[in-house]
Every structure is written in C-alpha cells, then in structure tokens.
Image (cartoon, rainbow, N blue to C red; front, top):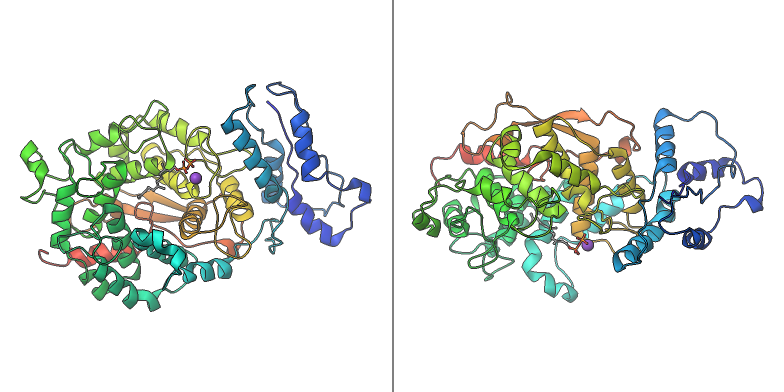
Length: 498
Ligand code: FPP
Ligand code: K
C-alpha cells in the first residue's frame, strides 16, 4: 500500500499563533508538490512512503491531551488503500476527491475558529441561518424542487432542532403548508394538487412531528393515511412509493415510520389490494422482503437484485427495528457479520467520513445513512465497528461550508439534505442510544419497538469536539429531535379510533 502521512496541522495552526515557523525553508510542501510526489509513487507497489514531513515545522507546545494524541496518531497512521494498476474513472475520481479534501484534513482553509482539539468549531449560527433561509418562499430556480418541498421543510426543521434552535415560530406555517399538500384520499404530495407519494408523506409526517402540538397532529387525516398505506402494500410484502410506482426499501421504512408514529392499525384496510393475495397485515412477508434486499456484499439495496447502498441499508435496518426489537428482527432477517463487514468498509480512510457504496466517494450525507446504522446494528450484536472521532473530524473539518450549511465534500455547495444528515451524523457520533427491553415502550403493543430506546450519555472514547460542538440527540429510527416522536405517538395512543 502507498502510505501517506497526514500531519496534525490543525494542532500546528494553533502552534503557529504561538511560535513562528523556524525558517521559511521548513514550510510545508504545497498541495501541488504533494500530489506530484503522489503521482511519482510506483502504483500498486508496497513501498511505504512518507510524503509530508512537516513535523519539525513548528515549536512544540508542550503537553498535549490524550485526545489530541489520539487525533495525531490517527492522522499519522492512516493508510490509503492499495491503488490498483489500471487507472479507471473510479480511481481517478477517488484520487481527485482526496486531493480536494486533504487540505481540510491537514489545515483550516476556511479560517474557522478552532476548538481545543484544533478542529474547526461547529459553525452553529451560520448553519442555522442557512437552514432558516430554506424555510419560507423560494426563488424561481427552486421550481424543479416543487415535488420535494416536504423534504426541504423536514431537512431544515430537523437540522435546526439538532442545532438547538427553537422552531416553534414555524408551527402554524408548517401545519398550513401540509394541510394543503395532503391528498384527499390519503398521504401527502409535494404541494397542493400533487399526487401522494410515500417519500413526501414521510417528510410531511416527520415535519409535523417536529413542530408538534394538537393542531399539527390533528391536521393529519389518519384514516385516509391508513387507506393510502394499504394501497402501497404489495403481495410480496414490500411497499411501493406511490400508486403504481416503484417498490423499494424506502417504502418499507417510510410506511412503517408512518404506521408507528401515528399509531395506525396493523391490519390492512379492507380495500387493500394485497388482501386479494392472502395478506392481512402490513407486516406480512415484510421481514422476508427486506431480507431479500441484502446483497452478496452484505449491505442492503433498494430492491432485490440491486446494488447495496448506505441510504437503503439505513431504511432496511430501521424498518426491521420498527417491526420488533433489533436483537430479534435483525438476526432473523439479516446476515449480520456480512452486514457489519460491509458497513465498516464504508468508512473511508484517511477521510474519516463514509461513502455509500463500494468504490465510490466519501459524502457527508452518509454520516447519517451509515453512521445511523451503527446504533441499530449495535442493539442487535452488542458491538459497533466504527471510528467515531474520525467521522466527527470529517464533519467538522471537511463538511462545513464557509458561509454556512454543510456539504457532501469540500468544493460542493451546501444544501438542506447534506446539512441535515451531516448534523444527524455528528449527533450519532456524539451520543449513545441503547435499546432497552425493560424501558416502557408505548402503551400499545403495536409497533412499540421504536419506543424502547433510551439515551445513554455521550460517546466515552477520545473526542475531538468541545461542548460548543455538541449537537442535540436524535431519535435513532425516526431522525427527529429526541422526545418529539414520543409526544406524537402518545397523542395518538390517547385517542379512540381515528
Ligand atoms: C446514489 O446516488 C444514491 C441513491 C441511489 C439513493 C439514495 C437514497 C436516499 C439518500 C434516501 C433514501 C431514504 C429515504 C427515507 C427516502 P449517487 O450515485 O449520486 O451517490 P453515490 O456515488 O454516493 O452512491
Ligand atoms: K453523491
């Protein structure tokens, strides 16, 4: 393997303020010089090469904490995976992406204020301002996003609450927006008059859950929702995303989220087409259907026969974790050793963030899609195999956009999606959740597994973030602020019938 050494330049940045470089000749090699040296390395060789020797560049600052040392050790130990002989589009993209990311791992190109570990601080105010700007009216260039409006609201609301912002001022507007997007025969579309879709429905129900309150809850037509979901349930056990639409694992997850949050009956409505095929409940054949999405790689795909992908893995694991205790449903339907193997290989070195699938690039959104899988897998296996500080480091150092909002990777523009899921990922890194059988779930036995999670303090390993960089707790299944989903479910449990 070609080994490159990343120096803990974050720490050096801090030193720089205190002590000038010894001489200008000791300046760190430029990024261009580094990449040309990387080019010169014999491809596929097993030579170990130290590329960036900036160790003696600055005065030492003396004592460093254990956490700082762990950070430095990490930077110095990471190895770029073997580069295969043939240059391919993927290998080229990987190399170019790494060169874009590298300066952010080694330094602080955005000139953000640094935390005590030498990493950029969480730019809370800037991100909040960015997310707030996505609530309200949109400029005309947003027209192609019209069908995704529920998502825009959800990403902003979820991101803002995780940043600690009070979103109650949006409650009325959000309730009004979704009362217009509700389809008369059930479910939500992107806006007034649009056909219903399970993704829009998921984002709408979660948004209403986040703002909470009787008006928001009561704006949901649960009886019509039950009928709509009954139309989505397929004879083979899965769910389509829309009437006549594609059947994929998003449907299985979104469908169960809505059933569980709104405490809807598990039996299929009388008019559900799947009844003609002998199915009687929403759970019939579902575990086996999700199981058939696990691929030879160990991850889960959108539908049987497709490629394993992080976003679909989360949907599948979360769906199973709604069906019952993860300790029971995951081993029953998933080959866990294979899954864990695949998940652990999604964490990119030396970037620290996750990619979504084999041979693809790190992207901040997988901080949630894969990062969020670990608590679920851990509830089933008792073990997690991920480097939480490394992911936190990618998010803080490489995924924060200079002017606010978070990104896929340096060089990309921020958006609500990447902001929401980077922040959720940071939350998964920082907080522990455990599934507790003894924890009183919801009063009802219907899909009560998601209500048995409890928070269990902060990550106890080496941290790279200070108090200022800690985001809020997020429900591991619903991806809503801790407590909001519980409120919603309780409200509907207290109601008789629809
Ligand atoms: C690959 O895109 C991405 C997908 C194939 C789908 C991802 C799906 C989601 C993010 C959402 C699913 C969840 C719900 C709840 C609806 P790409 O090829 O651009 O990215 P890649 O190179 O990282 O794979
Ligand atoms: K992508």
